[in-house]
Image (cartoon, rainbow, N blue to C red):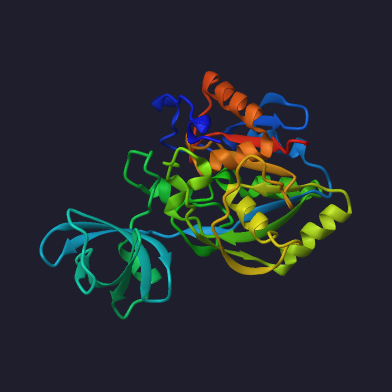
Length: 343
C-alpha cells in the first residue's frame, strides 16, 4: 500500500489545542468493524458498550519533562528533547542546533548543569548529564513538558495535569498515551462496578509517534523503537477473559502495540522488551478484540494500525465522517471505539 492511501484533509480548526473542561466531556465515534457501521456517541456512554467479564488494558506510563534549552560552549542555542532515559545519568536525545554538536563537546542546559555528547546513534545523541542529581531529578527541576508539535502553545500548569493520565505512574514517556486522557477516577470506578476488569501494561511512548511516513511504499518505513513491560498479572487476566468469553479492549494504540508485540511468537508473554512493531492492513491481531483511541495524524503509522484493526475502507469513511461532523482531533481531541473487523 502507498502512504498517500492514508492521507486525508483536516482543517486546522479541528486540531484540539486545549483539553475539554472535564476529562470525560469528549465525543466518541463508535466504529463497528464487524457490521461496518458508524454511530456518534459521547465518551460518558462508554460503559454501555462493555459487558461484565470484559477487560480494559491501560498503558500506565508517565510523561517526563523531556524538553530542555541551553547553549553550546561555542555560544549557539540548543534545544534538547530526551527520547529515552538509559540510566541515572545517560539519555538518548534529539538535539536541535544550527550545527550538530560533536562527540566530546559539552552543552550547558538551563544554565544549571552540563551534558557531554558521548556518542551519536543515527538521529539520536547519547548525552551524559554531569551532575550529582539523576536524570529524572534534573528533568523535573529544569525540563518542560513536551507537548506534541501540532499544539501551538507552550506547556502550562493545566497541561502538566491534563497531559497525564490519572493512573500514570512509570516515568519514561515523552508523549502521553492520549486515549487514557479521557478517563477520570469516577469513570474507572463506574467501569469496575459493572464487573469490567482493568489491567495495565507500560510502553514508554517516544517522539517518533508523531513522525509521518515519508516513503511512498509503507513497507519501506523504518519504525521507531520503544520499551515496554507486560506484567504476569495482565497476561493471566487476558487469558481468563478470553476463556470466559469476554472481550479485551486496548485503551490506546500504545497498549495495543505492547500487547501485540509480546505475542509475536505465539502466546502472550510477560516481561520486558523493545518493540518496533509496524502494524498495517493485513496484520492478524492476536490479543486485542476492541480498541479505544483518539484520531490520528494523516500518513501516520497509527492511522495504518487502526486501519488494520477496523478495516481500511471503514476507517477511511469514519475519518471523513469525523471531519464532516467537526470532531476534535489528536491528543486533546475526541475518541473512537473500534470493534475489530471480522475477516
